[in-house]
Image (tube, rainbow, N blue to C red):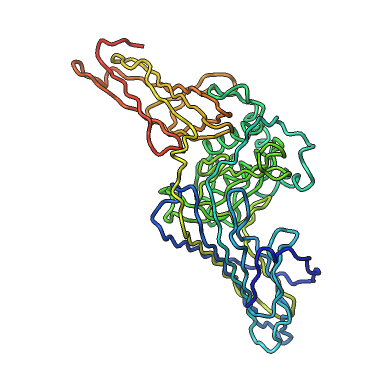
Length: 484
């Protein structure tokens, strides 16, 4: 069998052949072998071995049966990115042996080619195996400065414009355009008004809207087609690829280049029978000169709106594909010949975590939270305010999810400028570099819930997704104390 490293992929494209396209039904098999009970969500890095296997068989359909050559275009393989490093290249093994070296073609897929197939063979079979080892991190890609929004057209090259065009899944509609426009110009009481016109805040608002308003649902699982973004906006639910599609469509509607990324990720959600599974998220392009240490063409920054990770992804995310529109096909086989039919294409992926790096994210104190009741003692029937003071300890933007006690109510401002009280156990905040943000929460202590002669103490909590411990505040409810 032949092997090829990532260096050998940079080869001239082969001449275009007149191929007979085989319409294949992909049978996707997923296996994740966990060697450590340590949760990937509690790690700052992971090393994992990736194995992809696929193949197909060709059978006679007539007296003129012949298969002289075959190709496979693979779009599902580990990708190099700022959060993922491929160690020692990508190795591809092909069977039969009479095959050319694989290469990455202009469509960013690995092309495998088998030629001079044995004419004496009654049934032809072509297979390949791909192996690679990757290192992933949960690092936040830092944006240090305000990026003026809307983006100017001079930021785009021809390739980048591809990620602004509507697609089949990431489509456009009047509803999407109106929603996107309202999000990037809306005001929010707990946002810093000085950063209303920068790119990071615009992307955050879109991500927060989708994460808050679109419910995760497997209702479309098994359907012949997935929902388009405009359908998700109307239905209010979707799977990860559909939710991601809406986020991408909203970004593109206001001139923000974005694309699909997919692969594998870990979740502790009770919605799934298995913790590991295929997953889809988005990447948003931030232009040149805004990310220190990035390439001259700018930087793609991950946004997983399904899991509430904005500007980063956790270390369990293994990126295997990227495209401008959601593509359900991971491999496509073609063959040149006559009087033949093909079998179903079996496609297997195995992820083997080799090592987890214990996280120091909890200790880095990306943000600090102080939490207190004002006042600390009230009477029966009173209301009270809990103030969360959130400090960004870094000189770059951070988007964080806050998990608060369910009884607490946050005050927000809608697009019409009206104050609205919302009871939400999860709230997302966007923090500019070194920003200090005060976020008020409200609660009423109904008189009928308390008995005369008793003194009550109630404790409420808040924490961020960057901290494993709750920050608590206690209030005393006592008969005769001030009523606010």
